[in-house]
Image (cartoon, rainbow over all chains, first blue to last red; front, side, top):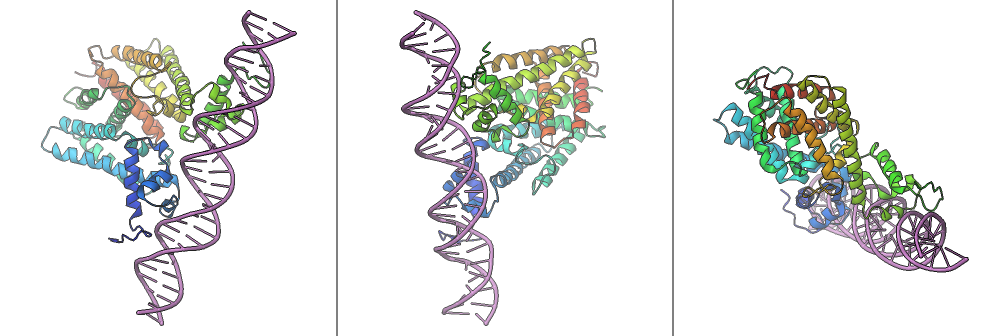
Length: 196
Length: 196
DNA sequence: AGGCGAACTGGACAGTGCCCAGATGCAAGC
DNA sequence: GCTTGCATCTGGGCACTGTCCAGTTCGCCT
């Protein structure tokens, strides 16, 4: 699609901007991400992005969707790798995939959960389905190890713990090595084999 | 101290700037917080802040310290109120104080845990002691309900879960009402009376 | 009383997000 | 094939920001 290498009409600017932005996110937080710098890296004028994203926030929202997609993919792959395993082990693998991706891509991760980017009220665009799919994945995995959980309390607790772990590791308050034991202890605590 | 109401030398600009900044944080995220707007609200020139904070980041760091102090105070008060109670109930109260304050002051909360403000490596200023005190409080409370926890895995897990819960509620992915059951289920799961 | 130095002022500069009018060139019609 | 329409891209401009600089004010110490 769009072989066009004409210098004027880029042809695939959205992707180019996304790539450039992720490149910048590898180096700095999204607060320091400037539309003009992204445009510069993509080799276009400072105004070109406005024809694809009405706003700086719109670009960030697009990045958030892309990042969420990657986070979800990382978890799906982890679950595939742990296909034959124990229910607890599968849950641990899922959690570790989440924290692992977050710690490896802290700035991209931050965009996804920034309330100023993805408004708390209603998720717009692809964000809703992506989050829903992630919740489904989690609910499924948690249900396999904590069957009696009508209101999904265990699922919420797991998500919160794993998410918080990621944030605390990124903020430097918890060493990265503490993630695995914490997740494993949580998952075993949730499993009925442990008690309750 | 410094009764000075002379218009030139403010006398207590640091406090005035802090107040103005927290006022702005009640309305918008710290990404949108401008030094000039803070100065304007404090009634001084756009350059006055630079004689107290070398940097925009320095102001944010100061705000982070102040916010962390308030978060800590909220938890201490909650523990005092739950003085005679059950170990689980005390832990729940502590957790609810954390999430409660965070959800009530999402933007201030975000400053505290922004890696771009409080650098992951070494906490500078008052931040270190404040975090340490919070960890002590948590470790103490968790130790009362999960005695055998040499490496503090339960404490880390609790912090992560409560922290993550706060973030997810703020981001709109979890309803605020889900916080209490989640925290209570976690704390009971950690207590040996429950199992294990 | 005199002067030092911290606190504050205004001006300036580069950089930013966003708006406007104009240039460009692909695709669809004749 | 040539013209025309329109999304795409360009450059300039504006208000705003963070930060630097030189000057002003005034509390405090000698």
